[in-house]
Image (cartoon, rainbow, N blue to C red):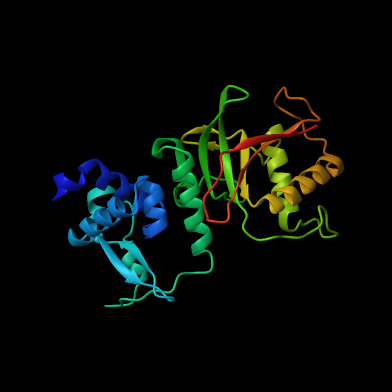
Length: 264
């Protein structure tokens, strides 16, 4: 049966699930494989019969698939089986509050980049080398307009956030914090660009609805106007230009092609 399904397809999905933390929903598995429903169903079914995945019910009547010890031993012994999250003999599991967001981030990563050109949030956290807030992933993109490759930090924004750029206690809220991080990455300020196994990040990709993207853009412009810092800038970019990338989150849950935005 493995020949009928394809060893490459099985390996691709198995390793992607582990890279994502060991738990996967069906739409995410489709994005990881870049296959149709039938091919994805057959591959998941094979992994379940091989004792590598366990199919678990979740509230609402849906299912997720969790990594078993056999999958971990075969593809990445440094990981822990996701079934350890379950109580003994449990056939149901209640996802945490960030599960849907995390699965969406994985779909974005695997639909926009090849497996060798991305890092998941799970992988970033496992290295323990990231300074500050961990993004939803890192991926390599090709900017066809600027004719170059960029390594972008991924931020998926599905709900509106509010907050001032600066507060009396020196903390920031909502998208203001995101906007300043984006600004620091673009201009190579302290706390901005990060070193990864793929290279040094040099941009930020925001995935959001059009309305949320417009609000974030205004917040970036506010940071651009208000941020006064003595920090030295290390890259030779126009000091008044802030470059970032945006991909629209569509109503059906898919993502449009990334495009760049330049605030001067």
